[in-house]
Amino acid sequence: AEVIYLGKFSHPNLVKLVGYCCEEDNKVLVYEYMAGRSVENHLFS
Image (cartoon, rainbow, N blue to C red; front, top):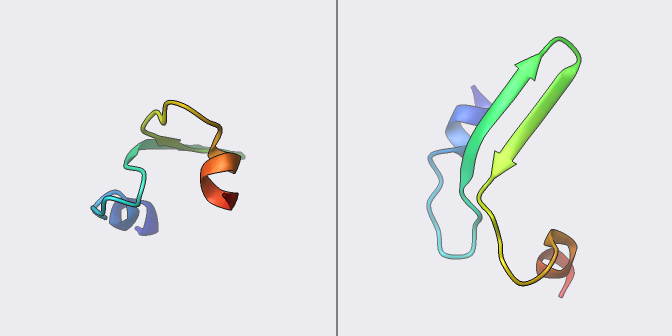
């Protein structure tokens, strides 16, 4: 339920959630591509 809610957020400073996978012990969130730098640089700069 929370993942579906996250996919509905829309703001210029947020990366769009494209999709997710939740199978057994594997859980993955897929976000849109951010060109230029790593996610770490975007988060901590």
